[in-house]
Length: 254
Image (tube, rainbow, N blue to C red; front, side, top):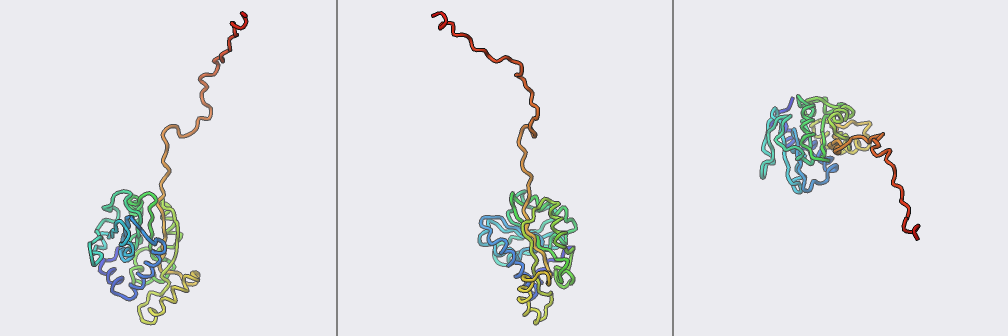
């Protein structure tokens, strides 16, 4: 079940907790992808809060928002880049996207298998995607006061297995958002400490979200002609006598 776009907008842009979550996840994304010069960068679900760093150098930025969620114009200033689409039918040419961010898209989709097939279709050769999903072991998936409390939370092994079935190769994984999903002033002031401790000792504090970077895996193209070497080739010329050199008659006559 997708959340409504007004609820997502209010959380990420109008609440202290949402702005803190946005910053933490966006900082991790920019560490994975420092730049996207000349590339097409897209986000699906409600990923637009993470795309702003790529406006400067990317050839194009696209915000894809699923129909059940609804759409809002984004960015607030300048030309709108967001578009309403179906989960499994995007208005994007095959192989057109270089980098894709999926947040609040996979875990809330009613057709995750078809969604992953569509993601594979739109990514170009060597294209990369980052999936941001609620961590089953984290605190954020256990409360419905944030968007990460909706949909199906994942463990890392579950997410990697699902992506592998759809021909994605996992490149990097991480857990983040270690601060508790609490809004009072004390916990907001302590958020930085929780993030630092969580990254240093992740076993003690499970992050609220998982981030998995994958690449599109394409099968090697087949060459024309025989697929296998012929083990016992036909010996068509076998049995033909080799030419015998003729005697030098001129030399013998002398």
